[in-house]
Image (cartoon, rainbow, N blue to C red; front, side, top):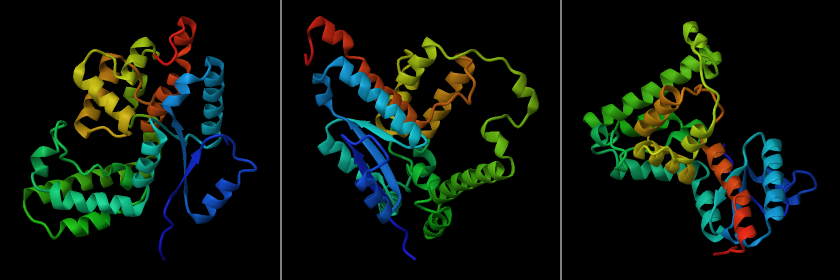
Length: 269
């Protein structure tokens, strides 16, 4: 049985779930990927209109259980990009490209954030667009240290997935109870700077800006940014920040950040 390909539903002037024929039609075809594009043209609208739009988007995202994808940029560029990212066929294409061009030197290049040395398939694996068995079967046709390194990374992923299956509380609580007694600081301006990539530490900021711009961050940089959050800012690791939530927060903030431009009469400058 062929799996249905996800359908991107572009919300524009229809920020609702009821009485929406396009949503019904999309749901009849396959899984729906809800999308809103923050068009640069919105900079030319009034501050009140942008603030209302931001509130409406937050409510729509709440109704969608946090699944609203919000991207910034010209719609003619953004919409095709999102469509290309969705589904099994796109994931399979990325995987085949990685086998052809990225598997060689994977054992060393995967540790280099400045190189495209990883498969970037974590999202596809997370949402089941590809199965680890498929990747293992394909990699089995390749020998050497690079194939072994990739298999080892897949094994680590499955190990942690198995641990979460048996210990689901680990999503929100440490497995070692003594760590639950550690004191943490409440998020403040330093945390906001971390989210926006404005800490002043170049590698941390580059990683967070990559996350905001692409919804993905290199694994080694994830370790650095997470360590900075917990050990330098003393913010609890379960504070609710996820990839698309960071992007959504930044995009919605842009809708509300132009008020001062309105007051100074420099709209569109």
